[in-house]
Image 1 (cartoon, rainbow, N blue to C red):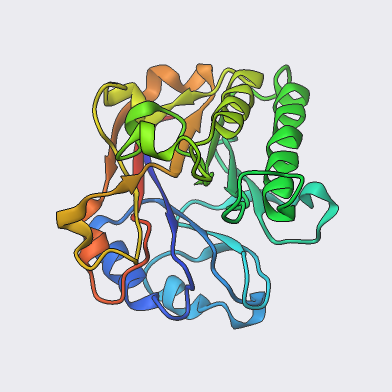
Image 2: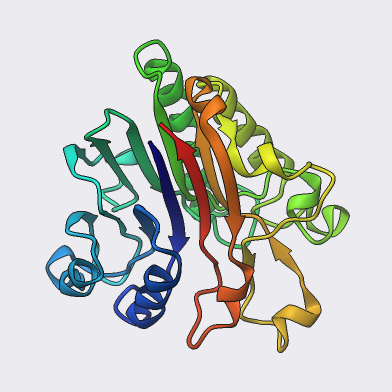
Length: 265
């Protein structure tokens, strides 16, 4: 059985429900994981997702900030929400699909502008979140063999995951402390980076382009912040991935674009 999972930081689902519907109509993934939905659960546009063919919904909402959701054609056996760093933020959802694959959807803190945890509480929060994810991965490793983790990790880990490795080494999302920590998270559960499984690490690859550029496509100063990882037991099932760059040019776009994985489970 092949399934397609998409992850997308939508940057306000109510504001951008039109392009969500456009994406679902054009690409029809089996599961859509959203981050930064920026709405409470009661205000989430459920009907639009249900009418688009996604009746199974898991939502962790928060007024005006953060928030994640999973919309699926495939039923869930269970739904769980974890409170990371005891902050009370809506940054995580876990579902067990009816095929017993575990799917975690994360919105890791962005970390603010100053990459110094001593003076920037947001960056300190980000580092603590990543360290907690290392412990989480180590704790689950023996018990969880068929799992997928997706989301906006807010870290571009590799040299060619940013437009300029040299210029971004001191910029939050590509600093060595962040990339090293994300590598620890990945190693804690032997996660396989699904996109880089197909695209060599020597090739430039982005999923985010800033709103600040007058012409984002011409400047092409992107970063790969959005990720899909699978456990080693699912590695042989990797079929294909796609980063939908064109979505950055849609009407009222998010600054992130969808990342898709097709997987034999």
